[in-house]
Image (tube, rainbow, N blue to C red; front, side, top):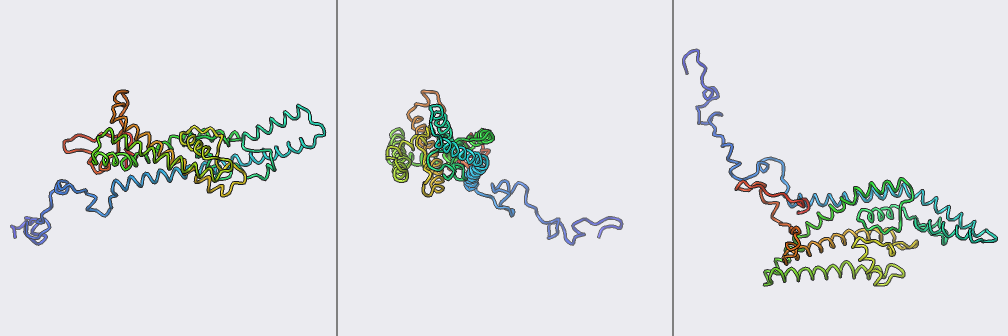
Length: 351
């Protein structure tokens, strides 16, 4: 014990000398030991850390899910706005047809008026043939989603157009937000497919002995043949079977016009009033349009990559095609040399 009046040291008050089992004597690891080991501090806690690849797939799945929800939202709004107006137009066409048939003497002026009114109603998808009031609506939920899909993908067949002023205003706002978001989702999906469908096959061809330029040409022609077979020839055969009056050439023509986002509207699937399984058919066409546009964009990126290898982009002073690196997410943000990783505009879709 120390002299009277002096407080013993903390190590003696807790029952041990410094460095022999006391609280103060326990050696604490240096603060930098965890950091120097290269391990993440989150690994020592209870919060799991998601792998960057899984986080990227989760983000991309969220984008696609939100895209589907956005189409469903648009379909609900368009159906609620346009269906009552369409029903009113059908009743007017039926009344116009009855008045015309009840006339004892048809004049040229009345015939011209009837034809002009019928043509105006036909532009909005209401035909005067048969019983117009009993025909299926062009603005049920599935048909409205199909219209919303053609709107945000910029295909725009024009077979169905908004009737009401509110519907036209909503179309502007819906497309203003939906078109760039659709392009974002397509870009993210294509960037995720660039490595397995472009970079990896090119590397495999080069490992088989081909030079870079011939390998790029062989890969592009192979991908082009695959796209023509799976997205043009096979769907054209299906359309020629499902659609009455469509030949194989008509189906191929429709696929080309649709996937090039030209959308003339002279051929539109599921346009017959008595189409069997119309809702399922329209949903299948929407999925086809999304996958087809994605693969067309991927084909353009593959052509861009081939142009890089042949020096065309350098000659025309165009930006080079960036191919996704599957190991990019595992790299540290700050390298050992202190240099920072350069951000990329397509980093959201890289994974």
